View 1: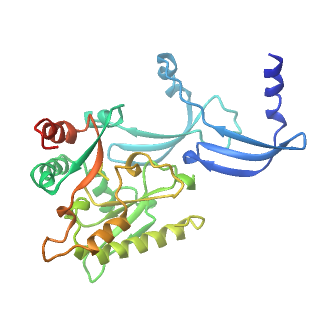
View 2: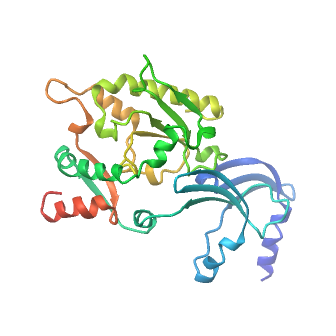
View 3: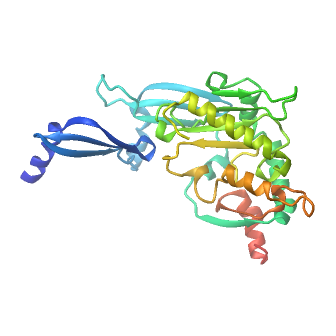
Length: 313
């Protein structure tokens, strides 16, 4: 007990010299300072959320200073504080994302589930995946994307917009913050590049003829990112409209940036450049892709699991 009290008494004596490091998407910081004139390192990490039914039932009532960052279709995102903090608390405790009304697909996406590594051959894409994508697009899953592209939502957040060239919008695109980013923590920076054209749904629709456009997009997106945030140096999609994720190099790869989810733009450009158009159509539809799927994902349950059971996956 005495040792615990003595240890606890050290924290108030800590005198900050400087921030040494910040990682985990801004959830952990390491501070350099002194205690009684001796050097000390203090690492602070946000504690895990309580999981008891009582604590979770009361969670929303503990929120205060809720500030909306944006709203698009059924998606809403906020900054908020826990109301047991002192009144002079200077920064929000939480970044909140709200999906309302949510669908069964959202519930499955955010529920714990096992992961499967799958191999999508050109034949599987042509015979199974393409029709699945058509159904997703027809079901309105892209309404939030079109809200941005057509100027109805999130316009004040747009960092860069390229109108295209030669009087056509075929090469037009824009850059905006991803809804999962708090707009403040640069080490967890996450931007989203959206193309204006509607005929390129995913990496599968890219061809060798698109290499110049892709390089142009990459250059302009990097320039706009560095101009907006000067301190910054330079997948199976969750929605089917060609998009580019721009993330800080120190951001831990989770979700759409994790291994088995994202496809590096430079790697795609290099692969397209080396394609022989005399023997193939010269596009990503001709290659085999490997990525991960959750066991609750429709693609796993409706396509890859039956193929596996039939001895083809």
